[in-house]
Image (cartoon, rainbow, N blue to C red; front, side, top):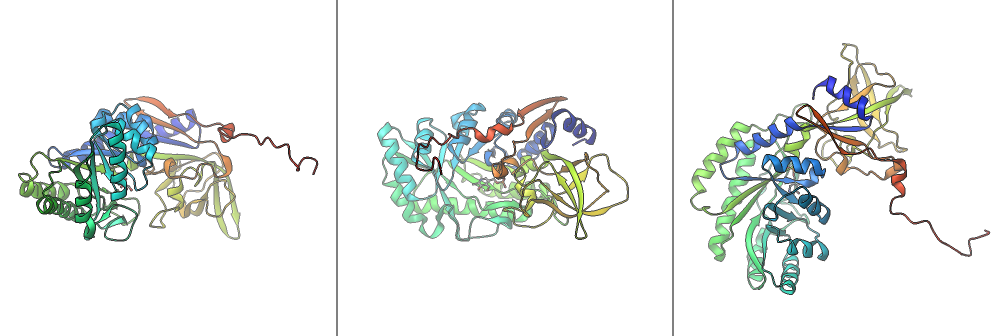
Length: 421
Ligand SMILES: Cc1ncc(COP(=O)(O)O)c(C=O)c1O
């Protein structure tokens, strides 16, 4: 994003702040959509950023939506998505979540076990409905090249390929579910287009094998995704031309056999990571036992990914200081204000000399930023989140207030033995 614009946003909305660029989101959405074979649909994975305004924006761009909780399902409806464009995936859907999804007649519930299918069948029977479900499979192949693998290894996700035949037969015996789809999500942060294509081809192969072996006629194939973005030195962007050519070739081979099947891919990171930045102000600069620190007003409580929490690589996110361009550099640790040594957003980062009041920008923060962070830890208010699009600013989340920490809490009403202690 333009640096002057960011400086303006930091000034106008304060820090810490998430700033999003609508034109970049649009470009990423179109890039993905236009490199997929015609007719493939993109389902936005809300988990990567559950801001209502972002969901609305992506819907206007043409996206469908993938949710993973009742909260996300509510956001999807609030954002105006048709039930027919919503799919629901999660290994631990509660009865309440399933019942709501069934009542709302969403397009497909991706089930992760036969027990879950049984539960849906029971709910559907009590409501007099037939519910579309897809089986999520944990395949035996593992060619994803993903930064974080979800298949081919033991996980809580899906049904093992070795047991999928039994699962299909068990599900076929249920009277109120329609085995309408197959879903495989192999992992996230895939940067190799060849792997991505091989992966999707293997998924299509498995889909066709299952339809033939078990005489099922699913009309939905969720190919997953995991489209990555380069965060760190040495990582290269996904080669989109190679992806397009590879998928086009696969599609030519299989499209007749997949005639009438709705094909979806899921994406969060690719659509959003590069469309947002995190802005935080340097509060203090200090030195401790030979190391330099920039102590900032935002931290891992608001941007856990940057602080290596739950990430697969311990590298610094790309970051820079607004308005500081010179050649002079120093090695600093960028930290937040939490009372824990893990609150480090950048380790030994080379930056121009900083002073209190400077604004630090952490790039590639549009996905898995606030949503992936332990926001209650130490009770700081939530940062504001603002979208810039077509020359206008849209506050999508107001800055929180210190008293928000008390929301939903009840004072202890104890007339107890402790009184007078
Ligand atoms: C089932 C499923 N779909 C979609 C996604 C989104 O992945 P990404 O943000 O890499 O596109 C994930 C991420 O973990 C996932 O588990």
